[in-house]
Length: 391
Image (cartoon, rainbow, N blue to C red; front, side, top):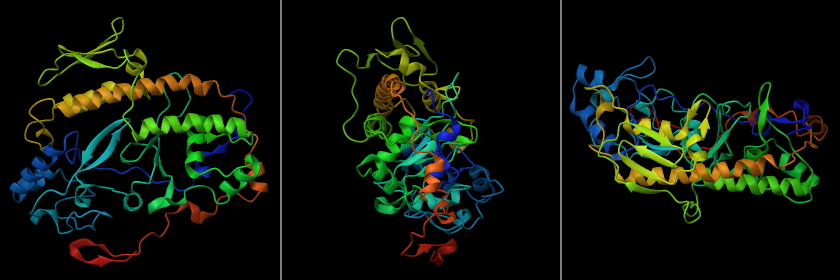
């Protein structure tokens, strides 16, 4: 983005002021790519007693089977101490475990070292979570991921688009939308601001920064790019498709339990042992977050075996059809996102709405209250050992 200095751009921390550290599980077994194996792990845990249950649980300083904690907001997990728990597994929920890797989590507060209840309170169908990730190899460009699922990605901050359930009270600097409406000649929505952010974000000395413009044409082009990226990241609407002839298919059946993955660049073929998927564009295979290829990381989460005698060792007996479908869709999403990248580079983004101008307009500095979670509760939440609390 030539011509834009760090002083011209607004820190993302001021643009979306409320942020939360990502949840920290403390143990790997409550999350898995398959929901049924999570229920089997839960049953195995509860079938053990005393020291056996404690060992399977994998205690940490924050959580042991004797820890008493409140219920996760919006969930039905128990609040009695896990050492004497009984009953069925709480219904697993979909979460984003790694970039573009959607898996399942047992939503029980007793299993999670740091669940970040403030995120669970605002998680609903209207919410969009923005996760900061590492820069791509060879660049200083920060990549923001947007997801409708609760993100478990570490170590970057999580910024919800809305501070309250139901898409209420956008997590934007107070007065920003009104100031943008004055500058642009029309009223942008919170989703428009997020779309622009995805298109314009870049690296600054203290974290991600976002150049803002009062050029309505440039703003519209950036928002259009960002909304296309949003649809792909959130997987909302119709399933994404590559043009005919470029859609990946299984050309040779995948084995029951593939152990290796490699890519034939000349033939655009992804090999899972003797199984073959093609065509797979090289841009999809090379798509990386930080130093890690997304497809390799996704495959490893499903192929790497855990140590015997642990709950994580309880896995599907074979590669599932659902994983194959998810892999084909992931290849498509990564290929389409890679196609978008050059179009973003063509945007001649220049900052004409500067932090100095926002300070003059009273948008900055952001009030301290905007950096803290909103009080969203109008009902009781069950606390430890079934006691109710009102927050």
